Length: 391
Image 1 (cartoon, rainbow, N blue to C red):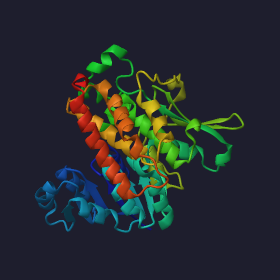
Image 2 (image 1 turned 90 degrees about the horizontal axis):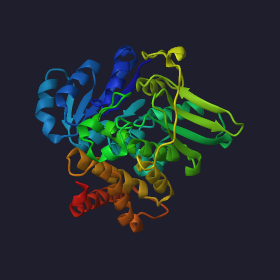
Image 3 (image 1 turned 90 degrees about the vertical axis):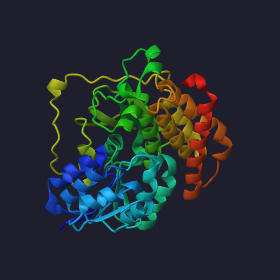
């Protein structure tokens, strides 16, 4: 029996890894929708390869190119936010949510309405609006499966376990491409230098977030939301080899670790085939060749994003939305060379300080999250104009 699936964010690194797995067993899947940002030609190639029903670019300007590339194939071509949400809402059994950034929240929510499985690689959804997303999944009887390698590892380590027996979870981090740089050099790091990762093959934005550890900060918050863990039961540790993706400490003193080669197809394949385990085309570890595993605590001076994550978890209901938006804005400013690498965390911290009175509350709505997102981006832009020393 074939499964109906959609891939939101098909042209990104996670989307491409998903397509690699799907294309190896094409008779098992009917692909309904593939979506992308502005790479119309790449999206069209993916849509044709998979025999999708519809291909949607978020960028309205891509429509002529997308239509030309799909002419004669019978595949629908559409662009823009409304078309993206309509495609995401088409009933399927399984949806990969891999759109990068806050832009992935609404399509993910739309997909949940069909009541299928949402394979969630868009961590911003949980950081910005975790209670909303999880409540929507429950309302429609949908399943949310984590696809971040760390959260997939935690999910697998917890299989069959009682959460009451869990003392803590440990999320591992490579330390990013600048982990061995002297502290005094970090302020001079360029986007190109921060965008090179020693272990993982990822998109440019997430690779820079790895260098600053903002990616790990987001994952700590994501673990808090997804597994309903108190911040005191969550920690991060630097693990340069990137072979252990997460660990769970139990109250009897046992610690369960999930190991595997640094390949996103592990987590994607687990979510795709869950609750079964099937063969995946990934490297197998030879422990004799690995020889050693190293760990050390993250330096809060080198990685100020980590203590910020715990502030967010202890903050008001909308703090996560402000944090995510400020983080995305800071990254935009760094990539544009408007601020230094080491100015990103102070910028996010200042946004949270200025917005703190507006972030409290017992409940949040999607409109409140969206307004907080816009306000935090405006605040970040204003701060950058006030702080020329950060350039």
